[in-house]
Structures are given as structure tokens and as C-alpha cells.
Image (spheres, helix red, strand yellow):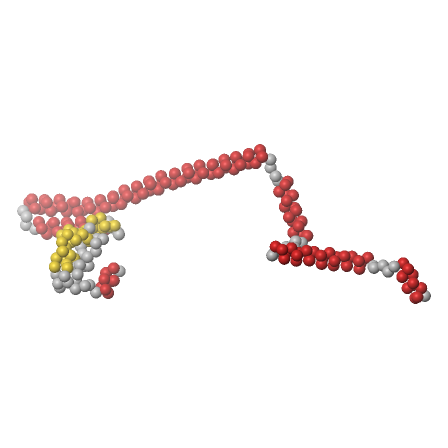
Length: 236
């Protein structure tokens, strides 16, 4: 019986089951695709990326959405005009806000200057009163004691200006600083360090870092060089 079955199979030809045929076809297709990929990689030097089904579907849906959202030329023109008008309106609003801010800032600065000046004038009013008292005293009692009165008024005036931020530049015995003083004469002095302020003809004044008026001074020459340690301390 077994021999008969073998003869029938030989006569009819041996048939591969369908599942085995599909597996072999899939393996053959995958091998061919791999060979094509390797051949293309050899030619270009880059391996072709493999896309799965989800990536292909996502790309296809993106293309369809772009095509569905496509606008005609007139619609695109109207959209561009609307966007241009929107940006123009934003620019006009920002320009108006900036102009308002600039004017408000200018007004605030002007008010601050006025308040600062008012404060300085208030500090100087007592000095004017002292001047009037000193003049009246000199007129009634002569010049006796006038010098002391003038010195007192001078001291009060300096205090009022100092409170307003004024700084006196009086660099006698200090190293010469060309940024705060002007040398009008060079005086030989072998005992003092080179370029030391000897005398001050006219005091200078500054507010903060701004020099309002440089001091007029004489500077020594012919003496020893100033030690570097002292120069560094003066700069600090």
C-alpha cells in the first residue's frame, strides 16, 4: 500500500504545501531586497533607510493634508494681505506705546532735575543768610571779626555743596593725576618724589567720576622715583 502511494505521488508530482511556499517566497523577496539595498549602498556609499508601514502611512497622510489645505492664488494673496495688515497694526501700536513711554520718561527726568535743583537751593539759603549777617556786622562794627565770619560762611557753603554731591580736588602732596589736575609749572625738588603736587593755585571740583574743573597745580621734578607699592595703593 505504501509503495502504491509513492508511485501515485511520483506520477502526480510532489506538491509543496502552500504555507511552505509562502515562507520560501517571503524569504526570497527579503533576500532580493537586501541584495538590492547592499548593491545601492555600494554605489552611493549610504545605506537606504528602511521605512515601516506606520512611517509610510504617516507620510502619505501628511501629503494628503497638505493637498487638502492648499489655497488658490487669490486666497493666498488675501491671506498675505491680512497678515501684512495685522503686522502693520502691531507696529503702529508699539510705536504709539514707545512714543508715550519716551515722553513720560523725559517728563520724569525733567522733574527729577527740578527737584534736585530745588534741594540744592534750599541748602544754599542759609548760606545767603549768613552772608547778609556778615555784611551787616561789618557795616555796623567795622572790619573787626569780618574774617572769621567769612570763613564760617565759606565752610557752610562747602558743606551745602558737598551734600549735593560736589567733591573738592585739593591734591597737595599727592601724586600728580593728569585726569584731575593741570600742571602749570614744574618745580625742582630733590626731596619729594618725582611728579608730586607741590602747590595748588586753584582747587578743582568733581561730581562722581566727572571732573567739573581740574585743579591748577605745580609738580615736582628731580626727586627719587615713587615706590611701585605706593603707586598701586594710590591707584586703588
